[in-house]
Length: 291
Ligand SMILES: NC(=O)c1ccc[n+]([C@@H]2O[C@H](COP(=O)([O-])OP(=O)(O)OC[C@H]3O[C@@H](n4cnc5c(N)ncnc54)[C@H](OP(=O)(O)O)[C@@H]3O)[C@@H](O)[C@H]2O)c1
Image 1 (cartoon, rainbow, N blue to C red):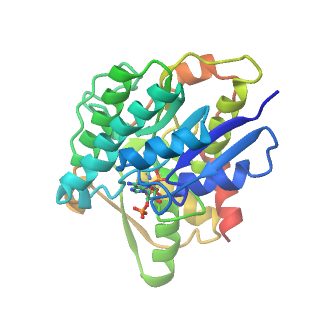
Image 2 (image 1 turned 60 degrees about the vertical axis):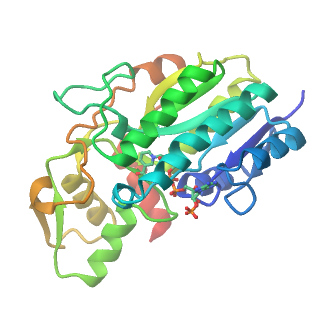
């Protein structure tokens, strides 16, 4: 039986690196890992050429504009990468009968009133980043049949910039760290997301194909950023480090953040024969490999 051919974009990002590292020894997967230098998703001609040459079964879009605060002033760039470029991907996927695997965000949802967010919960992003991600999702939903959108939250890994690495770095240079305690959600270890995506692409070979559509994905369990930071320091052997609770309002980020990012993973669990790990178990795994 032929291998599954996957064209990965944004391969140098934190999810992209988690995928390339975790998939590299799988003999059933033929992975073409690209980042902007090899394949700019904003360039429709380059995309068409790559699709014609490689003929991917899946295009896994790990490319994105992820600078949430900067997006408030770089609106055009955020929209170009997270929305217009997604349209280019849809056109290429349609033409080449390729399934699009896209990563989206908890930021697309309306986080008020506070309740568990299912995939059909109302959307009302507060930030430019969230708006650009929602537009990307809508373009896919309106143009494609063969797609999976994974909405994930609080992504971290051994690679790139993320909350876990920031807390560890600041604990070496600052006497105290202030962390907000009034935003709730679930951390997602990019290694676990990479494994779930591997399960999905290989499920095609096992004829276990989950229905196309939108899925929430994160680790199991809920927390807030302050408790997340406490656990990071505890697992890194720095339990005594002074952490101070602060409200979102006092912290004052340039881009508004959702207070409620508690996503239901019921749909994922129903259709994927893949267990969700508790967020603390995965956090420990990541910190063990970082320290
Ligand atoms: N990080 C989070 O907390 C979080 C939370 C929820 C959802 N997500 C979503 O999860 C996905 C993966 O996030 P991540 O944290 O792995 O992102 P990331 O680390 O920022 O990686 C994105 C990658 O895409 C590349 N890229 C940017 N523009 C491109 C273009 N035009 N063509 C090709 N590549 C391009 C980036 O290159 P440069 O670095 O050179 O720009 C980077 O290597 C994204 O869709 C993101 O929206 C992330």
